[in-house]
Length: 140
Image (tube, rainbow, N blue to C red; front, top):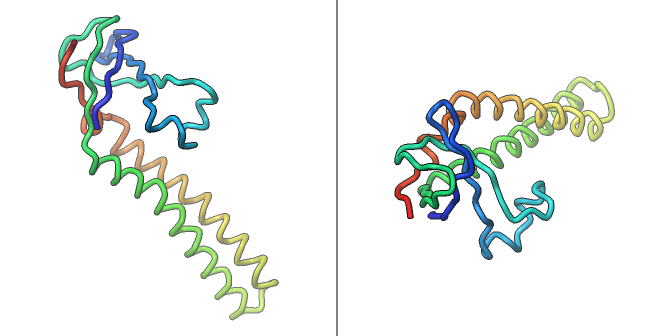
């Protein structure tokens, strides 16, 4: 995937802030709903080509990286939810703890919340430095 971005700010640590205009392909999906009506995204990447504020740059990422990160973000919480619900139903039925459906739902929600803690740890360990995700290839 390639996008053209504008350098908005040069940061002290060798990073730059980029402003990316949302293209027509992503304009209809609701994935960016948290950005309200904004058509722009601000990201920070490593300045490997000595870009200056105002420069237009080409930002690249491999499609396999996008798919991998999307799978991680959606599959881990879903798997934890299902595992929590199955365990809740099993323990509640086996030990007559409580209403099986309520206990299953509650344990599923706890597992789902725990999955977000795990995602945060994964994000901090592997994806905090996005050098392997987004790269600037050239200036215009």
